[in-house]
Length: 207
Ligand SMILES: N[C@@H](CCC(=O)N[C@@H](CS)C(=O)NCC(=O)O)C(=O)O
Image 1 (spheres, rainbow, N blue to C red):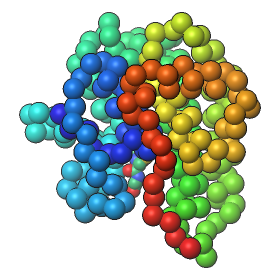
Image 2 (image 1 turned 180 degrees about the vertical axis):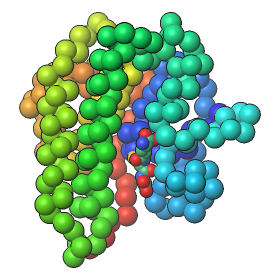
Image 3 (image 1 turned 90 degrees about the vertical axis):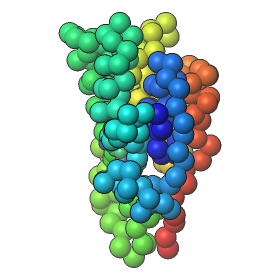
């Protein structure tokens, strides 16, 4: 299978980490969602990343759908999201906060970095950052026991933390949220995270 998208996207990275944790081999197609937009649209009509091209020719799009497929493939014992009950509800809630924070920080970043400076809307940027801050604070108030088996809530939250620290580190300054620092440190020390570490966020800049 082929994973399309670079690891500076936290959505791509959470899929890559999950593939590694679950023991799937994959090739990595690093074409850029901005620089190779036309080629990207041939893989995914939305022109977004990640996509996962399967060996039978099917192409899965959207990280949540890809992760759901991976969990189905490995079955409920090994799945990264608990199959039912309170544990599933809790994991999905945390994942919604983490992906929501990524969406909001991403929206603010596109506005700050990609949109021509004369067209930027500071109130919108402030609103998005405030929404992200709310989600991050809620995640920081959760319990993240060090001995818990790695699950999708931890993977997605750790990918969110690295992403926010690359693009808007004020939102997640070191030591502001010790529980998230500890989670990030534990996850980033793992082989699957080291293998997918994004050194920097790369987007075309305007004005
Ligand atoms: N809900 C989607 C979001 C994917 C997403 O936002 N990808 C970003 C990169 S982090 C992207 O493709 N951005 C380019 C664009 O939307 O034009 C998922 O989970 O896969």
